[in-house]
Amino acid sequence: KEEAAITRDQLLNKALTVFSKKGYSAATLQDIASEADMTRGAIYWHFGSKAELYNTLIKEYSDRGSQIVKQA
Image 1 (cartoon, one colour):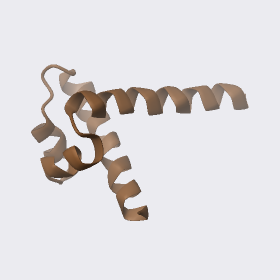
Image 2 (image 1 turned 180 degrees about the vertical axis):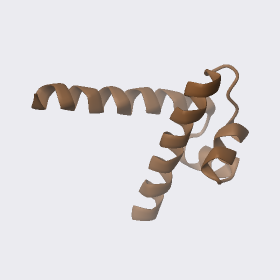
Image 3 (image 1 turned 30 degrees about the vertical axis):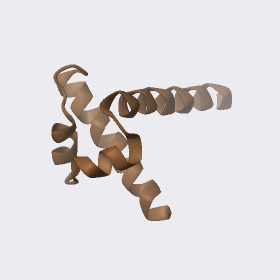
């Protein structure tokens, strides 16, 4: 399970890179998979779809930002 969590975090980080460079509409799951040196299957296993990956990314970074503000 720890390995799955690491893979998930790597996918989120690489997705952030790809979405930042290309924007949501132009970014493809293949772009993200290539950036992460993984398969699209890994993305589908962890997130199910591009929209779910994007929404998870937004939520997690929003949560992290909230934690930083609370600690300040």
